[in-house]
Amino acid sequence: MSESKKTSSDSAKKAQTNQSWGGRFNEPVNEFVARFTASVSFDQRLFEHDIKGSVAHATMLAKVGVLSESEKKSIIDGLNEIGAEIRVGDFEWSQQLEDVHMNIESALTARIGDVGKKLHTGRSRNDQVATDIRLWLRDQIDQISILLTDLQKGVTGLALAEHDTIMPGFTHLQTAQPVTFGHHLLAWNEMLERDFGRLLDCRKRLNQSPLGAAALAGTTYPIDRVFTANQLGFDYPSENSLDSVSDRDFAIEFCAFASLLTTHMSRMSEELILWASAQFQFIDLPDRFCTGSSIMPQKKNPDVPELVRGKTGRVTGHLISLLTLMKSQPLAYNKDNQEDKEPLFDTVDTVQDCLRAFADMIPAIESNKEKMYAAAKNGFSTATDLADYLVRNGIAFRDAHEIVGKAVAYGIENNKDLSEMTLDELNIFSSQIAADVFEVLTLEGSVCSRNHIGGTAPDQVKAAAARALEKLVSR
Ligand code: ARG
Image (cartoon, rainbow, N blue to C red; front, side, top):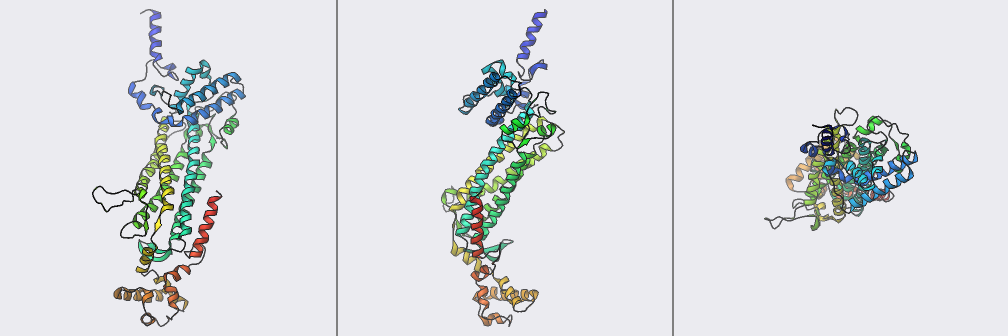
């Protein structure tokens, strides 16, 4: 074989390897391996943020004199044109080019010529992808904050309207003491309020710029990391290049937030499902959030809360995936981390959908006040009030507990609530009971007497709902 022939067949082979890193390779990557290692099918979702990061990087390279002003301009113009093309669906993604980063960079060079090859100076895909995911997730967090706030407004608004609606409060799902429906709803708001705090914490910690960490050790160019951090709205550049390109703890933190949020929403769902059942009939869910059965004509199934309850499983699953993905990874970047995207993307999508559905549905709930009241009356829910009454009249709590227990047994036998017994009947169990007992034995008396911060008295609930709403409005 002549010398010249050998050279040309070599370069033909090389031409089929990846143009971004094919230099040291002598054969094209196996077709299966190309598919197996590619991420462009899902990471193209990062294109807006990839372009933003590249624009900031190119601007900085010109500022420090690595690029000329005209080179910077053609790079940024080219990137913006590519962005516009992707947005309208005119861009052809290539699996051969592996990921979103190399697809865009290669399109840039095809468009503006060799100057496009200068964009990657002083940067690596490792700090590039770490930057992109942070920027993307930050935007998603900002949208989720709005959705979560909407939901909280719906919950507290309903709580205000229902501040004096009496329902049974449960422990062990057994009637315990009467509460107000508004109070129950404000308990939901407290869960959501803590979730909101966790979301903000996550945003705060993720908002630092990995750009400049390059592959793992930093770069020899005179880069300005504070400048790129500012350009991209990060609070500051990250402190350690090895850590910046390797850890995905911010994504894990987000999924932990999402797992708790959906867990809370699954608890709300469960209660909505129970309350909407023929056995409870506490609430009516609007038809648009329910579906029918193809075989049982009477059915109205609470599909939306059921699905939200079910979606909790996949979100928690994604948290476990990411924790397991990160576990035992040595510093710094490893290809394992390419697996961070699908669980994270799906978590974001799921959380947004669940919040949207709930924010829409909760304010549309109609309470059935008579059913709630009757249910609270049914289970001797004022028994503790009677015991407290006896304590106020000088009886030790344990003895009072025993006395009331006997009165309840009598009530069960005679099918009478405590408030329906005569004074003579109540005196069978204690001579310390006088006519004023009936003030505490009514459901209204019971809830009104729990009149302190965090208590179920209607006045307290009204004030608490107003405080919560005020906080949400000024968020
Ligand atoms: N697609 C890769 C990821 O998602 C980008 C970084 C690849 N870096 C590398 N050295 N292979 O993580």
